[in-house]
Each structure stands twice: as C-alpha cells, then as structure tokens.
Figure 1 (tube, rainbow, N blue to C red):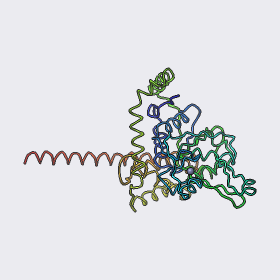
Figure 2 (figure 1 turned 90 degrees about the vertical axis):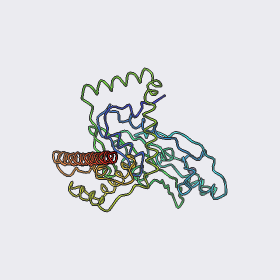
Figure 3 (figure 1 turned 90 degrees about the horizontal axis):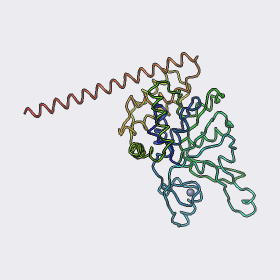
Length: 364
Ligand SMILES: [Zn+2]
C-alpha cells in the first residue's frame, strides 16, 4: 500500500531536514528522534524511504551491492568479479528495514558457519539485518529499549559503512551503508550518554498544538486513509521534485567546499556552547556540507553551519542544568536568525544592485 507522502507531513521541519540530510549523506551517522507517541516519527521515516530514488544493485546479491562501485563490494561479489564474471544488475526501491526491539547481535550482523568452514573448507555467511539495510533506511523504533551492545554495533556500521564479521580467524565483510533513524520516547527511559553522543543528529519533537495545523493534519490523514492512491497523486509532483533534489545533492556533495574560516566558525561555536569532545565538530561539518549540497551551492556558508549545529547539539549539551541548556539553544537560534537576516540583506542588496545596473544599462 502507498505510504503517507513525506511532503504531505505538516510541520516538524527540523525532523524532515535531519532525515533529508542523512539521505543525502548517510555518513553523517544517523538521526535520533525524541518525542512522545503519535508524533509522525515512523510515518516520516517510512515516507522518506518511499520517496528516495531507485538504486541499481547486483541482482542476486543479498547485500544490495552497487555494481558501479567495485571498491564497495561484498566478499562474494568481489570474488565473482575477480573470477571474470559479469555481475548481473537490476534496479529496486530504497529499502525500509524495521529492526525489532528483540534483535540479537547475530540477527543484526549475520553469522558465519564455522563448522562448515572447518569441515568443508567453505566460507558460508548467513546475512543479517545490516545486509538488507545496505543502501536503504534502517529504522529502530524505541532504540532506548534495545540491547546497548546491539545499538553500539549499529552505530559502528553507520559510521564505518561496512560490516565485518569475524570468528576464529575467518572473516566476511560487506558494505553496510544506511540511513540510520532511531526513535525514542524519553518517558520510557534514557539512552546511555555514550550512545547518545554517537547518534550524529538529534531532533526533539513536540506534538503540534496550533489549531489550524492540527486541522490540516487531520484533514490530510482522513483523505489519505480514504484513498491512499488518490492522495499520493495530489502529492506526486512535490514528491518527485524532492526526490530529484536529493539525488542531485548526492551527486554534488563530494564537490562542496569548505574553508579554513568555516572550520574556525564551527570550533568557535562548539567551544562557546561548551560541547564535550570533538564528535560534534565533525558532525556539524558533514551536515553543513549536505545542507549546502541540498541548497545547490558548492561551498558552505554560516547559515549551513548554524542549521547543522541546531541538529548536532541538542543531545550534546547535557552537562548543565536543563534551563541552561535551553538558553544555550536559544542563543543558537538567535544567531541563526541573525545569519539568515544577513543573507537576506545581502541578497536584497545584490538584487538592488543588479536592478540598478540594469536601469543604468537601459539609460545608456
Ligand atoms: Zn555483493
């Protein structure tokens, strides 16, 4: 059945932005969405996967290997390629993999059949969840209820983009690059601080209280439930446009530049906000690059950095009492507002200048 379209989700702009930027650059390292039940968390994640462009895969590979990236193949595909075989290809939709809370390590990373390896000298690997998640979206509902060790493995893979299983001197590896989306309801227990910090981005969402928006949410939901296909048709253009924009940003991302002074702005910002460790700095840079790519620019600006900080900092400011954390985030908002103002003024100035020169040109 048609899932609810991503572009039809009312509000929750920050959550949508975090999801889009991870889709452009999965190596940002995932997003944690914190909020109460019924706040469109899983709807948004599902909708994002449905919207993403189709991918080309090696048709009979359980790891969804990309036939055009010989450096990112699983051990099986690499061996076939080395043996001179031509890899069969096909296209498929971006997969949405829902990880059950009861998942064990074996279920997640897959298993090596050691007995077979010893007896028959044959390396047999049973793919796990990370195999089907490669180049897709891995959704972990209530990540705070999952075994800490499993969360650790997921975050490792999300950051490294590869899954290596090793047992008794035998190993198997395959690419495991995915958009990691975790959700949690803070009322049902916290995530350990060490794990929290390893989620690249974090969004705290609240239910929408504004009556007009609530009416709009209700109206769209009712129309969607009555006729999912018809509702999708209404949103098809918007969905296609966003999908196209994400695909273009993926292509241009490696060409987006940053300067020494951008790094200085990031360091100054995280220093000023008293952020622990250095993970936030690199996350802000990666996120700002994806943001610039999404905006179709080839270098990052201060607004990109501040927008990125808005997503990278909420879960990294916990050392201080809550009020102080709030006020630090508020200061960040103010700076963002100011930066946007500056950009607007600069744009107005530029267009005014352009107009003037046009007028001057006509006078000549
Ligand atoms: Zn493969």
